[in-house]
Length: 127
Image (cartoon, rainbow, N blue to C red; front, side, top):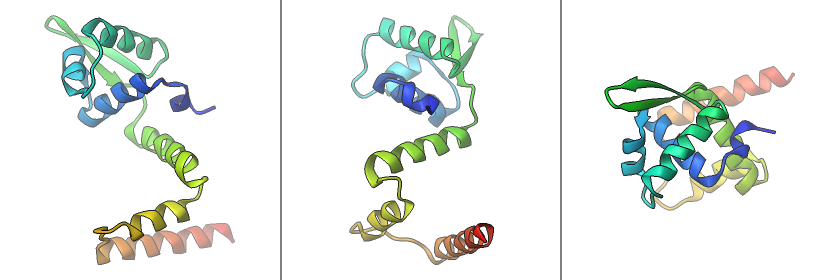
């Protein structure tokens, strides 16, 4: 089972904040959360995330600074797989179709060229 699926909603929320900034203190996490729990809860969740191996910390002044243990690319792949599985039945085609048919959605010519190139590469790999 994917490690990210084992995270609670709050744990995922905290990981998103840490990934977005590269590192964060408990205070920064608390300030970034729209519906933040108590400071004690945030610190507890950070300790749990560290125990699970998702973050590590170092001390800076009086606070611990938390950093993710997995590269952002790995976390992004896990998040994309979770998104595809949850909302699009695992289909990248359905996800892309939903994006392209969204009103106001715009894909640049450069993005279309890169996508076409990636599709060609995937076809060649599949042979």
